[in-house]
Image (cartoon, rainbow, N blue to C red):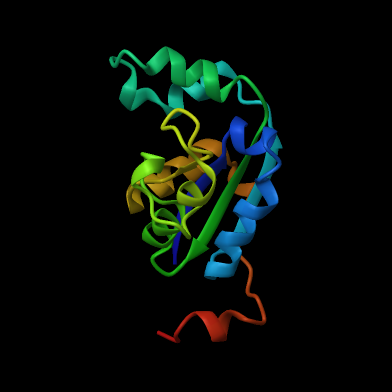
Length: 151
């Protein structure tokens, strides 16, 4: 099972879209294994966005993600990273098809509602950055056999 990190960013929380965003991932079949509502400390934001530290928009990213509370969710499932990215849509909302989170609810790249891990290894690393092992609960749902094929 892959793991992926999803962050409902400040605009998603402020607009009251948290429940709808989480619902879409759960409806897709992904299983929540960790979730918290938090104010992001600047140090964690800088670590999370470290890949962009030399880019001109880095300070803006840090300022934005720390500007208001977020909801951070660790999901687990078969092909979880790609399933989540398909559910989210393109980074540029105007390129996202209807039916995706960004295609349905976002207009601008700087207010695109959701962060999602961009690769399997990154998903594992991001989940580990945002959650202690004790905060994660990998659990079987009664519906899992109807979502995941036996392997």
